[in-house]
Image (cartoon, rainbow, N blue to C red; front, top):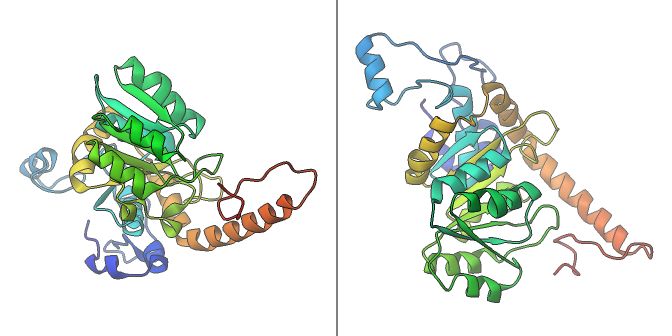
Length: 298
């Protein structure tokens, strides 16, 4: 596909609406949905070049699809990374990102404040495959520093975390992680790239559940992994191609449409959440309230 290189200079609002737009010869007004599983070629030689990667063309929708590619490019522009690969769900994005980095004998350090399924992956599934997981209090830099005082392969955290809204000092943790030789994977699902770009704070990989703010309307499942072209084109793409948690073209189209209104929804929901948190904090029947923009938030 041919994407507009000037899109990197557009505002986030424009990128959310026009990023990744590559009209076909029919000049449609909205992105089409390519529901096909495979693609045809003008000759056996052309097919060979496509399948061997000599020509950059779509081969099979488990590997790549025009509708999915539009969503990937739009989200990539918003996050400011080199590349993006979409997945069937947010949890598949987390699992593939970690699976692309880790193997038997490797070590990962993670914040303890995590979504339940993320904790299971790190605490139960990866250890079965010989990966050591060390959990720390994500708010305590001394615990990060101690855990990262020995060579480490990966670091994982959510910030804000789901559901406790804990905020990790991303820059400080990334600096400690890189000194230990670790690749940092940040789950940015609650903040979105509109409120926080983790790679600007030197995280290496960013993961999303598209089911949250990207769709925002409870319609579809989806996820995404963003990072360097070397990482996405290499171990991520290999794992995705051969294990198959690919995003469907219909879900990709819905998520692409979701990005168009994400700024409006995120701004309004953030303002509403703050107003609600401030109200609840004043109620004598409420023991405590956690919301990152409250002055009382740790």
